[in-house]
Image (cartoon, rainbow, N blue to C red; front, side, top):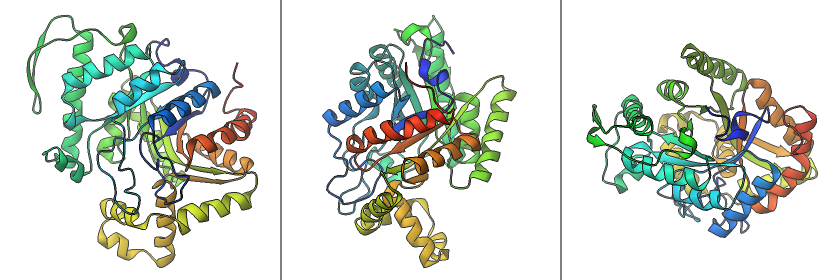
Length: 372
């Protein structure tokens, strides 16, 4: 990969920081508190510029087409991610902005053209997060039936092959695959600088992790059990290295950082327990967990899970004073993760304190360099 593309993603800080989910109303917090993220485009521009000025590496959106209901219709108002990225790239200087693209919803030639347009706007700072699909209710809105699970990645492989050939071959070509049969494929311009954008995949299944390791530069994994995460990270890296390549492994979560632990704990209880959107959480749990798994949980386990979903539907919960939050992030780095995609309840209100207090602590831990 040419270091002139996405230079902060491939060099610079040992541990990368990414703002996650700001293209969706309420971000990633299923809460009814009035200060929750409203997701205006003006707010997204301010947030991107704030992250850019602080030297954070990237913004990663969620590919969401339908809200989860509840009192807030959680994530019911969302910006399409490639066009969202275009606006943010035009308003920033250094950070990478990803688009999250559902493979079956975007024909490869259309996706390639949109990606190249965004990439030229950002002068090589666009990133592509490839999603092979999971929520049939969203696909129903498009009149599409999802492939069976592992076949989704077989489709994703063909989709990516078409795009990469389009960006690497001079002559028009035909493509005769299982999922795509295309004639006379051609398209210009190439991505900025003639090199493809950075590629990400967030599949958590065995097939998903293998797809990411084989075809992408970044893969997502979950941090719920750090001992297991270490083994999964090593497994992904092993697959990639057998192919002569390296991958970075990111994870996700939510941050609540306040001057004292008590203030952070009280705010967490306020928004993620007392004022959470239980209707939306019911919808998510029914999508993510089987009825049998839900019935098997104790009342305490179910309550803990619901509060996690209220805060950021899974992932690391870094709740505390700046020392505690920095310490939780260091645990991710020690487990082998390369980066953390995180959200807040109120991004613009909370990110400045994180930048002021947590980032310098990460610098002192050797995870990040002082910004020049």
